[in-house]
Image 1: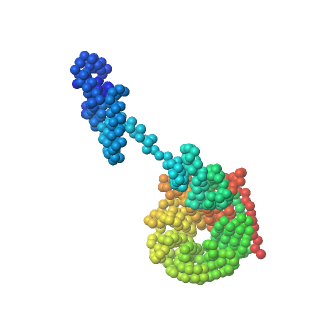
Image 2: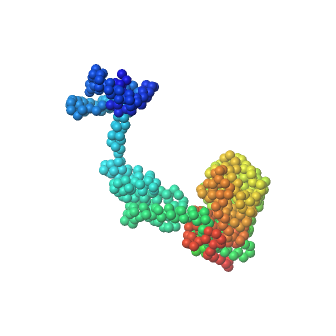
Image 3: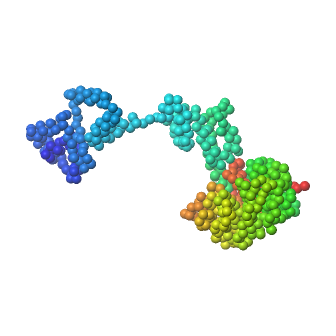
Length: 553
């Protein structure tokens, strides 16, 4: 039996060392020779072996992984072809369900090697080039829609698949759609599209005015190069500097500012509000009316709202500069204010926070006064969920926006808090203890302390990538926000760059993906441009500047 079994195993292509039913049959070369010799001399056993391997009978080997049908080489002559044709004829007559059942039965009786062979045969049959097939059915738009979800690297690879894929991508203007998707979702892309003026080729239907798909294909890597250059400029501190000399007559200092693509609006220590042309840097208008320094401001497309050391809040019409409303509530200087979506919050040196309903510029009513701080409230910020305030009493307090009820206090700063920004769950604050702290507003935990400024941190802003802070040491620091939120990041890696140009205390700053605009006690407004950097721009030292001087009349 051993020689018969080994003979079968050898004909089936199995090795001589095989695990069978939990045991191992090891057949050495000498035993193999003896087995062949025995088979040649034993006629009855040889005949039985031939009978077992004849077409009428299958040999099943009971292996540890299930039944395996022994393979054999069928001779080309005989009844096989006739039997095969007869089976196929019967197969064709059956229903699809019967055909599937029959094939499943056949497959279940095959060995692993045969399964692999069938799998290799079926793989190409199961593949479908749907991108090529869809246009053939008049469904080009579906093929375009599928490919429009690809990123740039995948879209490049798809163009190389075949001419039909390339045609679908080209005629579907998929590179244009990819750029449009990035512009819609990424402010950096949007800003570049506006500044480099290729936005005029986006978000338009197919007309003769729109360049071909190849234009957008070549534009994409140029945009990526611009983005990499801007990021490198931020990291290395390369920038072009423009300087506005305000030249206030009585008292110097620019306490607050806000800007957009067209203008910069600044509040000055000399009680005035000055509006500057963002391109020419010329003073367009001066608004007067406050009897004290303008300490805070915010504007939208309709109004400018300002707070002053004269304890009042004034509402101005943006285009004409006309005073629309004056709010008299606080007993001391109005230190900060924010408004959005019909709600305004102001805070004061009188330790209180006022919450206002803004039905219109002329219809503003007091909703609630929040009391709880033990010193001047220096800054407020809010969204639909929370109002956040910071005070000289070293605390940050959180209030419910809807109910105006107190929620919690954030403790950690060792001295008074001068500035703060709140967005989503993150609060970033700056203090006269010279540090910046990052907080989780929901649990009140301090996530990180940033150290580096040498004096009071007076202003702070952050976006998704960076924190930018200004201090009484005259320095502006750029911090890596994502690294600051990572507890594993070493403290020495968090400050990306320190910018030194102001000769006095930095009072206020605002920034976007391309620039920082800051104001100072030195009576200047500086524009730090990280996009339009000259080829010989230096990463260290003082930057070449373009100076504009405003002389009051």
